[in-house]
Image (cartoon, rainbow, N blue to C red; front, top):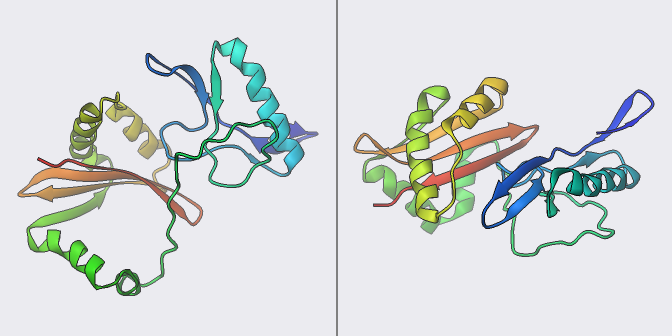
Length: 195
């Protein structure tokens, strides 16, 4: 946190992660695709990044990974170009969105419904089904998954901004997503189990 007088001018959340393949690192919001520093100006960004560098030896970390979805001052920061953030502005009317997607995409969207897949949106009651798909996919990818407790805690702390989506086929969960919203943005960590 960068403070001037009694005013907070910037915040950079960092989580210390340790794993065998990557070692110890400090990551800005590792459980989501993006989420880095927010600051009033470039000077504040630079102060936050300098403070993050100073934490490296204190935390025994090899690097800091910042996951920004917006432009930040790049002085001295190494950028990766192998990750992308996909965004789509959504219209107010779902039919307008379907029309904009075109006939082939509409058919691809409607086919699962015709074959009996159903989508369900809710909260904590859907976590067991979502987590069964999530943990299965993460295992198959060779990555450690997060505990169901993480998703429950996010729902408990942000009940007005988090949702769980589950797709069922013949009553069994086959896909899902954990959704988190902020302002006019909605981020999804979606998983699909194919058997």
